[in-house]
Amino acid sequence: MGVTKTTIKNGDGPQPKNGQTVVIEYTGWLKDTTKDQNKGNKYEFDSSVGRGDFEVKIGVGQVIRGEYQAVNQLRAKR
Image: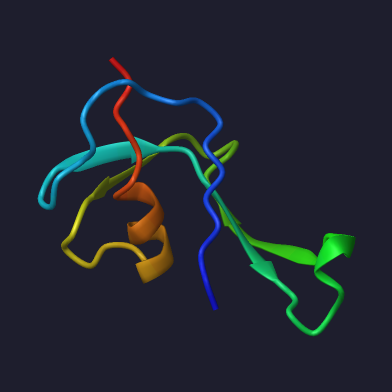
């Protein structure tokens, strides 16, 4: 298992620190590892698209581990 992050808009600010609140828009996908990876066998399991931005405090257990790993590497917009 692993996490793949796709950044749509890069920021040029600092990376978030534990305890800070960030606002993101996200879509979570599960990849079917029993099928050929080149055929796009993924299934959306959650998304904030259309519901508004998602506000979360980093490093306090509010999100699943994979989402924490991805968000923790982002850079803030200025």
